[in-house]
Image 1 (tube, rainbow, N blue to C red):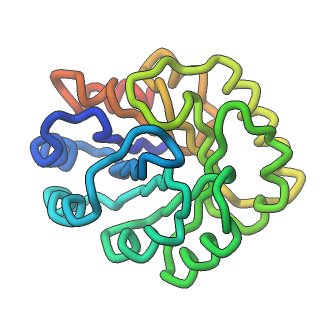
Image 2 (cartoon, one colour):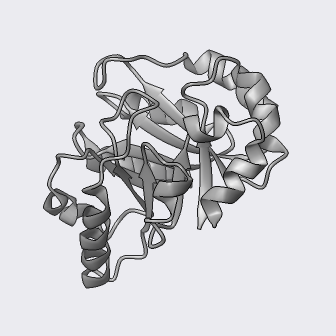
Length: 208
């Protein structure tokens, strides 16, 4: 299982990125919010462009924005491995095609209350499916238990489509929740790691 750490709730992103960089974490999860798709808004790209230099880790970019196409070019210029767009936004196919043009792995994310069946048209053309286990837009929320069954059902759908997409889960991830998600390929954790005294210890607990 791979781990990505989000700095969404960080009070000092440069410092936290330096601390995360000396751990064995696989990715830095970058939450991008425009204040339209979700209520909150994150730092601007110009700020992100500066602070991402504090880490050598690959980026896992999650676009929680109304029109992802406007953001893809900028984040494609960073050390980015995945760019994920939301199923509930517009121009999803065009956004995925643009991500692929940049040679970056394509991800699609789904909110907790969006039917899994809505993913069907995309299962053959994405590299990652990000299952939100909280409502997107705010860090520090509690994991929604029904996510476990959703992941089992999603795994069946991927098998049916012979899809090679990996499953990622984001929201309320701690060591207790992680033990219930052994069938997941990538876990995204924010507050659990950032609020700990020893980042490597927290990350290691997630992998157990």
